[in-house]
Image (cartoon, rainbow, N blue to C red; front, side, top):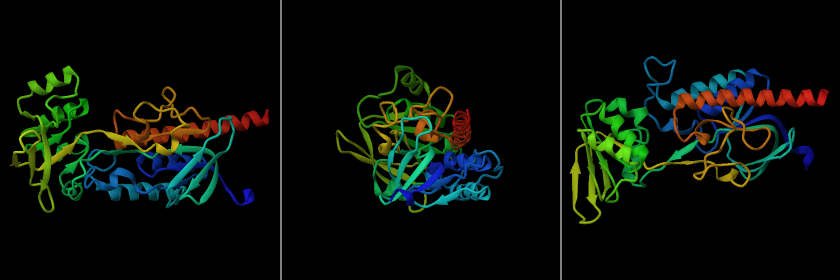
Length: 320
């Protein structure tokens, strides 16, 4: 059985900006990368209708088109892009050790280096109307999409520092921002709460939840409910931003890689190295702060360079 297992020099798990950028650099370094796309080929950007802040697209580009461009570029240099979901891993503790990977619970692989670019998934409310209008006015990234709602009225759901920060960011662009807080208090730091309260065009509604997102093709308003009184009313907004957190896609790596309390992979210093030799992490899977396509791409580049240098160092040890 061992003789039939494919050996890969550089295996990339995930197909967002981090994964494809890692593939481009790894392929150009003759690492013969194999990239498995995962369940959502292209990552979160495939659910984004317009990307206006990625360098090189002066007129903007829709998310799926951008990801296809990145895939074509990676393939042009020889990346083997494969459909499939990595379902099991067994990372070696030894420098120069071989990492074992299972794809779709069936395909067994061995890899000399692994670059993890599985990203993080935004948490949503779970309303059918919310899911239907993702990309049509429902967003989980104010920094990414806030520009499209300039001088309009929007709402944001959340009570932590991220929600408060995004609310104040939106307030600089939008006519009015309504902040919906599920409890009777905010979880954000006092400093962030003061910033929200001092911003004149932010209205905070406590004990309030979204009951329904209104609109056929785009958001035309939201129906909200007071969870104490049961009172419902409609507020007219063109955008709804969800800021209730992200979940890094790291479940299959737990117990093997060092992570923080929320599941983000911890990398060493300014590198993409994990606690396992030859295993690297790039993109949102190790970044809980910036979460932008351009920063993910940057760490994808770093991961490929780190993987190349790792392999070179092993070759030198063998030669000596």
